[in-house]
Amino acid sequence: MNDSDYHLHVISFNVPYPANYGGVIDVFYRLKALVEAGVKVHLHCFTYGRSESEVLNRCHEVKYYKRDTSFWKQLSRDPYVVASRRSEALVQDLLKDDYPILCEGLHTTFLLNDSRFKGRKIFVRTHNVEHDYYQLLAEAEPKFWKRMFYRWESKKLRRYEPVLRKASGIFAITEKDAEYFSKTYGHTWLMPGFNAISRVCSETGRGDYVLYHGNLSVAENETAAEWLIENVFSELQVPCVIAGLDPSDDLRSCCEPYANITLKANLEDAEMMDLIRNAQVNVLMTEQPTGLKLKLLNALYNGRFCLVNDDMVRGTSLDALCVIAETPEQFISEINRLMDEDFTEEDIEERDDAMKELYQNDKNALSLIRTIFLNP
Image (tube, rainbow, N blue to C red; front, side, top):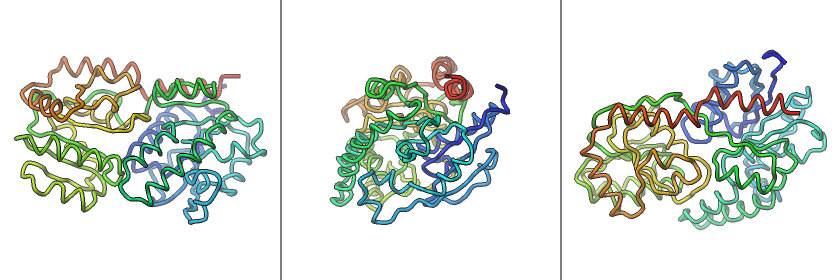
């Protein structure tokens, strides 16, 4: 089989460009690596909140389908994230040939229950153990109706997940997830997250501020930012920056009393990259030890010191590249220590060598190609 024989349908849960939040970063840079490896990618995107993108036209074919976010989809027996992406138009497009299919996330797997695809090669890229992820979203959500939605969705996802037994294979994003899916369903391979950078581009020397960044419209990230503001950043004498998409009024109010804390909202990609690269310490934390936090990869590839809690790196093999803290006192102590240290060429080389072991887009794309096209 030569490159011209490699045709692959990829079903994306959202339009994967711009690649400015975790899930779509992984999708976009995997697509890029597959195209560069010679695969003719037939990309199928569900649209909601994002428009069509010319950047994606490097794929062999791109088609868009409107996600049905009506209230009635929330009443489905299937999880809302799945039911709202059920599309007969997509089915008909996929049935025009017998090329293998890669479903991005459990979200796009409705066709595994469709008898018309019996015998078809269908692989699933998992980004989380979704029922765990939604349960943790529920625990972090302050609004009652959202909390109830996440809990109900978690129950439906747990009931729905065994559909993965019908998949030809599962590509898990972390070692922890790979262990879970392999033990539960078999036919699982570890496929580390794809990212924008292929080598560590950190700056040497010192920065003069601390940074927390993330999609601030996500409850988990807002909760983390508020915890850092109230327990850590407010106790420091150094400048601290909170940056990300769509912060709430509550988060803005949380920052206002502190002269050393600045909130930067909805930055362009280049501005965010400059913030990450010039910070002395990138502080990242989560209460959800699920999946891979791609913002951590971004910080490791582009930033200086990374200070994280244990849940941020659990199951990722990245703990040796980060400084770990759990309590407010530990975060404060480590930030004060790191502000006085230079980030050196030796630090960059050590990090680059470690990252190349796991996170090489081209190597991981070839592994995916071999698994999909060359396995019997």
